[in-house]
Length: 392
Image (cartoon, rainbow, N blue to C red):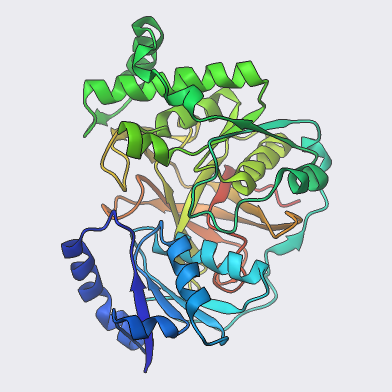
């Protein structure tokens, strides 16, 4: 039986970690593995990824392992485990290493090969000359999603504009009430309910939106991607509402400083006119052809209703828990070391979800392509959904 080393972020406390390991134990055993926290276990090229935010730690452990055998990453359905695995494996494959993701608790299915969704990008001209603001550096865990400005310009013709996060964060509480209060009222009045956020959380979330609008105008941005977790850790604030509203306004806005995901959002919006939803893949059912995605921000134009919630991982700030009706969709992700590949497939929304262990807006998708492709050849974590079938 192969030993797998569990890896978790500091957001998961010791008791929660122990409970999660216990709940996963039968699935780990069924997959032919056992877990071991001892230092010796780090030598095995197999990791049980318990949570998101572990990508850098996982790569450091694998880099220290003496074996050059293919890496196995064990993923499970909650706590952003699969998103982390996708990012890790994408980075490994960019550097010529081999590996695979095992989705615990899911029925296995043989690779089909005839429904592959990975293809070279040929449609690049629609974004030429646009300016993408990178507001703060990409989040540390985006190990496969930090292309340099020259690659972005060469492949897509998009100029990356570095914007200090301080332009958003410094003096956030000084944003005038007359700018903030109408935004809060618009968010709250249209909601089905407000669950966790207090009045101060709502005002702070609206202030982030005001500051992002000002920065976009000041720097002449067509789109932006924001290192939003620094808002959480340093100010106990979130950018989820701000990014939601910017996308509704037509200024494409992505999370976590993920440049390939932001490019995907820009590309889909330019070609379809639809508001994009950037999300984490959470669970893959290869046999059933299904994929679950979730995130804490989504444009309200896509929703049939929503509740105002806190941010999932931290329990802080303001996020959106949206309902989206079953309908046809297209799902995509730009990636590869030269940003010249894309995963793209049609599909449909089957249902929503309300798991307490996933980001707030949760969708179950049935894909036209083989979702197992994500486990074998991921281009990174975040994928982008738009309404309608746009494959042609």
